[in-house]
Image 1 (spheres, one colour):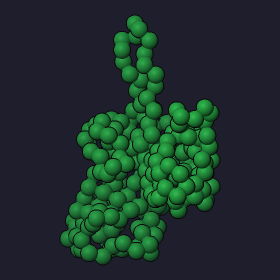
Image 2: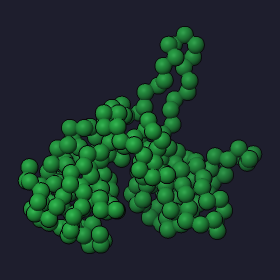
Image 3: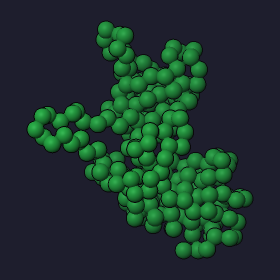
Image 4: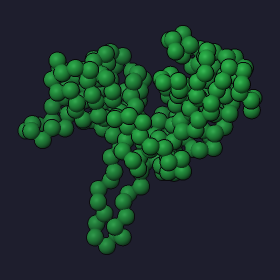
Amino acid sequence: MSDATVEKVRAMVTPLLADLKLELYDVEFRGGTLRITIDTPAGSPGGVDLEQIAFVTRMVSRDLDHDDPVPGRYTLEVSSPGLERTLRTPAHFQREIGKTVSVRLRDTAAGERRFTGVLIAASDSDITVRVEDPALPELAERTVRLEQIDRAKTVFVWGPAPKPGQGGKKRKPASTRAAAVAAALGKGPSDEMDPPAGSPSPATSDPIDDHDQEAS
């Protein structure tokens, strides 16, 4: 899919989500799948739930069938970013400042290819991570340009183990609604940077065909 087509899809979906008080997190087209990721506004206490994902899927599918911005056969997938979200754009990184992130670089010219730490700064051109490295006596800060990054994602950090006598229960994740959606859908990891089984990202899919899709 060309950048122009992605922008057409983005322009079509953004106002629809705004009416629902949701945000467009990302649009990707890879391997015949048009993946639209939606989210609640920054600072919201909960994530996107299953009903919202299903409703947005129906609405977007109808509009895609009507406007036909994507040529050929493809599959529509609407999902939430999940507990561990992919970071691709400057806005993605800027939204997650203060979170733990995992970064994989395109090459090793700038040092270690993979590193994990707390994202402490992000601009339109680069990010700075306070790296977690037990070999270093002090935490080191590492700045890389966005074009150096091959893949990046947030890392969900569970709370500390409970004290004796508290029932041995783990602390719930920050977004229990997102976790409930993920558990209900049972979606597994999609690539090597995805979270392990047990931390899936919810999604629903709709096959889209040129003039074949029934309007909702």
